Figure 1 (cartoon, rainbow, N blue to C red):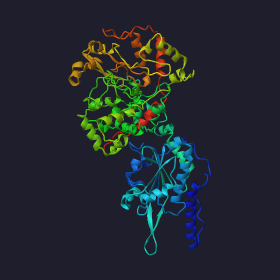
Figure 2 (figure 1 turned 90 degrees about the vertical axis):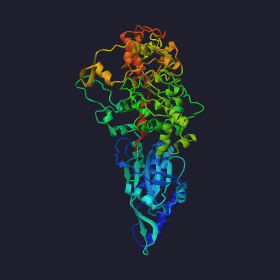
Figure 3 (figure 1 turned 30 degrees about the horizontal axis):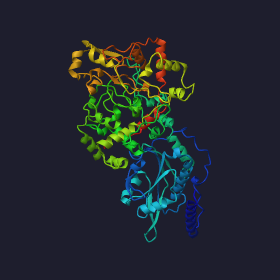
Figure 4 (figure 1 turned 60 degrees about the vertical axis):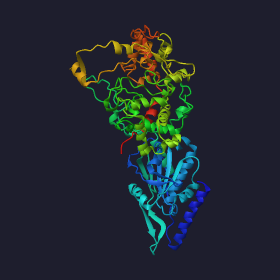
Length: 637
């Protein structure tokens, strides 16, 4: 506690003592929060904090006189979600176990967390006055002047009037009654109960502290508990569910062909996310990746990333307010879609190709399977305007939607110093996508980090095949200091040729209608209700050069085990089947890439190569998915 605050408390105590001279009473005992905790604080993550309801909103004014709301201060696109400690006080309170106690405990927490900057970065303190007549923004600024400093973010707020304050007090069940003297004059004091509220990153109440329970040790334990990913997962995870499954696909349909199939869907379970510092993957790329290329005309900032993240998950930016970028690039499915060979857009409209993963997309020199775009900034408008994706009728339609949604007010100005427009929308989403960098995989720790135990012997044999006999590294490149596992070029493997030129239509098609149950359906009936499948000529559609027919971009193999199904059309279901396809030398056609040839791999060698590919999963994928779960999705009012 600093000296100024110490003497403030002495003054409060003296005022109380002076009052007690007039009416003798027993000395008031100091609350536990002023002294050392009498017992050992609980171990963070060893217990659960129940959800007590949603934290309420309300109009407030900050100490600089700016109007805002409690929810905006808790979290919005420009204000990433943090754990919040909310206290109600009034600046002239003389009850040492009332408002001064809340302020003292907050100050102790702030001082302690000066030594834990990482923990401090996840905490926000909010102190709101319930005496707006006296506690103007200027007075709240003066009140907080001796308490502010480096470390925890601390906001001192008031309201414009008692009328605006009352709904907030009612919502938080915070009583505060004015005290009048014998003549009926307001004494500028209040009768109230001390309450401090712990609020998580999703604006949910997780604990409420009174005078006896308010102590910096227990509060810090609670804060750390909310920050423990496993503790958060445990709150909503059945005992028999693998915790890591929460960051995977909703239901992998394993054994769906059997009648005794039982769903393992975690989509039926609440999956909470936790925001992360996305800028970190730009400043310090994970082991195995080079520096992230960032264009000079769109430097990375936290404000751009936050805004781009909000746009990426916002379903309102489609024609009917139901479809976001994340519904084709699903975070828990490798930022692609595991459940369908080809993507499905708004209203179930068919898309020709599989959704490419967005992991490490910052390093791609061309985008889309046919390489038709070369910058992330421009790429975003393809899905926005495509009729079978987000189906917006025009660029202006998207811009107007954003301008008319007030939760975007001021965000573009803060990020770009200009309003929302075609350029800034693309730049914001591109900034978020550039943070989805994932490496430091077991392979990276072994090959670049020289940790011989990071992968097993089978994976090491697989890598020898990858760079030798199998020749995979000719297209999926590995350098001395890093590896993108792509040459950023386009190749013809025969998949596109076979899809376009060797179609076999059977009169009867077997259709699965439930686990283990199949029916034979006449293809004429299917054709009568299905949209005809469009042809796909790959790079030729961009260049109109015959030699570019059925050439598609080389995907990166990082996180490849997470991004099934494979190939541009999602026609190969498993990683081992992909290896088997290349072992057969692809599919012959006049434009087959000369690098594609018979490999003559044995079954054991195919297994080794597959195990190596499985070692390319980055160690931060769960963190990126958890951050995605914490993003707003554009719920309509």
